[in-house]
Length: 218
Image (cartoon, rainbow, N blue to C red):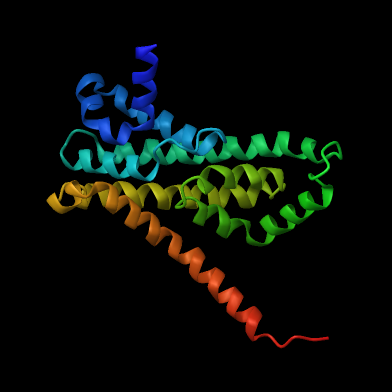
């Protein structure tokens, strides 16, 4: 039981134990990093796994020579893209079955609206969701439920995955070992997440402002 608890703690907080893992497991660390990023993006029930902080921490250890930054970028970008792809197909396969009229609050019209939304705004949503914890895990699943066309989804999935991994790994690589950053790691991650949230918040505010400015017709 104690072993399972320790293993679970390792998975949930790998960003904080990464140095120990590298010393203990060497090259196997790449596989563990790949697995956690894949699960965090690819399985709806594991949005609590570290994502942003793990990429940042991995970049910081790469700067120290403990990990290869090129391999990190390649493997973790692949994990992020593969995770979203699996999540999309789970939603695409399982989701519509829930809208067959058996559950009162799951109506077919909701599914149709979701499809229309993702066909119109889905690309932007998939990319921006990469930078929002929890939402990052659910966005591809909902895109699958809404039957967003796969050609559009995979394009923005790859684009978002590349931007997300590059931004956080390189941020960790160049800034993760600065004394100020190391002493305030949690605050730095929160600041990065806040900055990631700014674009969708600004756009939401602009849309609301436009709606208010539009003359009402009766």
